[in-house]
Image 1 (tube, one colour):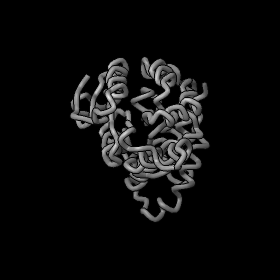
Image 2 (image 1 turned 60 degrees about the horizontal axis):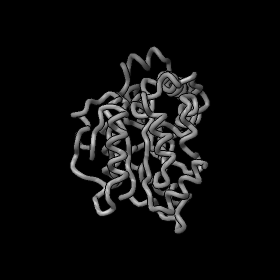
Image 3 (image 1 turned 90 degrees about the horizontal axis):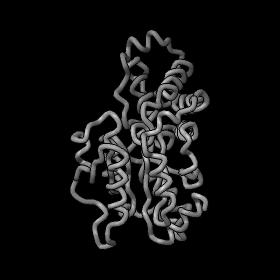
Image 4 (image 1 turned 45 degrees about the horizontal axis):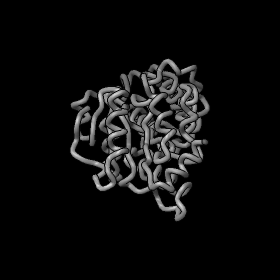
Length: 264
């Protein structure tokens, strides 16, 4: 059965939409080539000198959970580029970043257990899986293909990406709208109460709260369990994420899909 066929079955069953983050959640420490592509695009499009930019920006923003566009803006602002200039060239920076990003084999960067979990969820008829990530979409797709898990995320279902909006809070709603348009007979957005964001940063939690959807955090990125306590549940690793997620998916229909934060 194809991913899209699985998704249609989930639609018919009134199933769950899972919105996966990438960096720190599906993949670990897999962003070097990605960061280099963003830097190179900024230098090329804005005619900046790298040594000067690094001197002005230091290590750059703490970008975990930010969109690519937001990171680029913060770097340029720190370098003294005015907002109008940033806005005028944002599409060129995005396009050039996507052209430059050419990852090596990223299979060694898979979060342990992720591929098996995605495969298990793929077999369920009540689950649709797609992405909510700050990565520009072509970057996200190439990153997952290089890691060997792109097959679990059907591009025809869309998702929410940093190329859609610079503010991450808007991405879950964009993803729900696209999946609903692809799968629902009425074309309405996928219901918020049947949607769960899965991520590793407070920004993942915040974007879920902004859209009124559920959120499960996994402490495999830069944030510890206690920093993620605002999620509906927090897992220490993918093994415990599986337990937490399956408990949520298999809860009785009359049980609320979200609840008090808990730790697994």
